[in-house]
Image 1 (cartoon, one colour):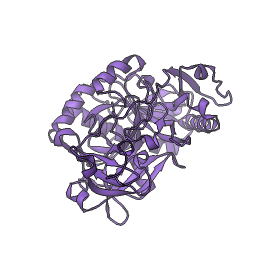
Image 2 (cartoon, rainbow, N blue to C red):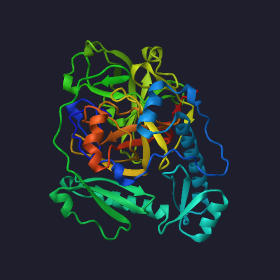
Image 3 (cartoon, rainbow, N blue to C red):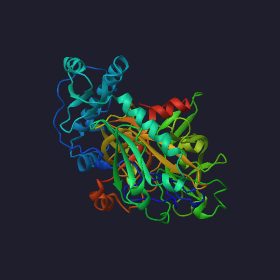
Image 4 (cartoon, rainbow, N blue to C red):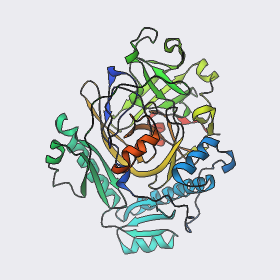
Length: 449
């Protein structure tokens, strides 16, 4: 996330980049307690064969990613890769099933024992799912109905005064519970808020209210980038923002680009620099923002950075995701979010950290410095992210999954301290923007090996 004077909160998500001039805050990512998925390592049960993107072998994963998988997920590298592959096979099956029987489909996820589950609304559909080799669960509400409720709620929130809507952290589809979870700040306004009774399937959970703004941390080096709306050699330090590169890609003309978060773009076709640790004003320009969007009609938060010769020479055109200390993961394909799937994110602020997809459909509000607000849509995971990680890559196995947009742990000095501080609120939670949606919107293609 980009570091900024943007407010961050326990239980609230925010964009994180340095620069008070364009401060923004994303209302809270759905709490990690939304789904209490244990991190057991049981092998998934029998399921129908389905083509899944090829992944690297376990022995080719970088050591820092292996450490993060074992530390955060309590899985072996092979179990991590197998669970990620199983999730993508489930996604393919679920998409086909939903297209054929939309009224019967109620969601799909990887269970806490590693077994894929498909929720349905009828016993006939349950028999079909079992016949296809998947575990089924009965649900009273279809996925289409839940998503309509989420859309209706989002439209209702967009019409509220800012002092009221700012107390609504997020809303997310909970496929395990067959409901839409609305996360509201535990504040006088939040507690007094009357939700519209015409919208079905809503359930409220309360989170602590946001604290005031915090000063941005110092700019860091590595694969982070810095940018400013003005000339970096003369811009005030508080206007210099920091984010992380996401995935290497190409545009429609084959030009090398990097994908990142839209809220990292300060405007004015800003240049992007590899930061110089000793003298930030002597940083090396490696490209320019060409496209960005924050909560537009599609609700995405993305940017496209066209790389120059220095960016290509630095290796930003390679199909790799870099953690700290020079470790790199080669990207072998793309993936879609599946509840319960294992994910890991990279970023120079916190290196590789891992978690599970907690919700595959989340909507939250992004407040910009000019008082405008935007609805941002993505998926939630339990991976820890810190200030400076915005725009960074989220992977499942060795597949590109999403771009980091916000979290509830951005102002913490470390993920260890974030885990301690947020444990009573369900733990760390991060908002990701699906990479497939970004490439579709921008006409780009993620580079893969």
